[in-house]
Image 1 (cartoon, rainbow, N blue to C red):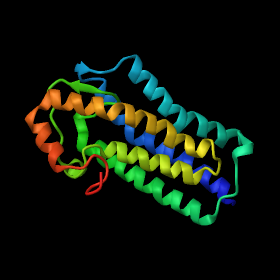
Image 2: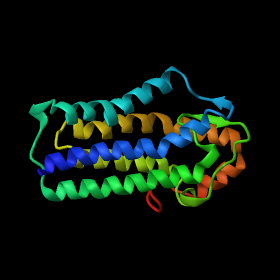
Image 3: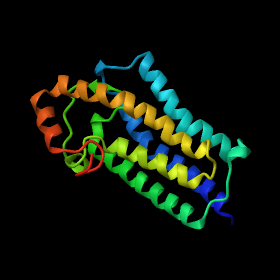
Length: 195
């Protein structure tokens, strides 16, 4: 089996794993009333850009090989690093969902009786879900040996992240006030001790 095929299979497994982890939380979230939301046209555009980079463009490449001009032969080390990043991303993704529980939301929502989650993986990082998505985008870049499809996740998710994290933190501060400010002061945004 070639490294290209292994990479494509692993990317598909990563997407399936993402869905399996997220689905039960998405179902439960629909049952809880949203009190405050920052959804709107800008959020929809950010989500579509991220979906294009982490889903649509790599999905087209996996299914068809398009765009062929941007493909290259990956090294076995690159594929192995991609598999390691994929596993790390899915573990992080699961830990964030487990810690959030009823507070989980796909978008910028404050739900009825919302609580500030500072336990589990959130004890060390304010946005471990974003860390998980950055790691998924890195895994995609390593698993899919195509300069367009592979790097599309970093560009697509990066756009969402940089346009969303500021408004999200402002919403959390407006909702939780001093508790959020104390939490922000003692945690990193994405990587403990670094950023």
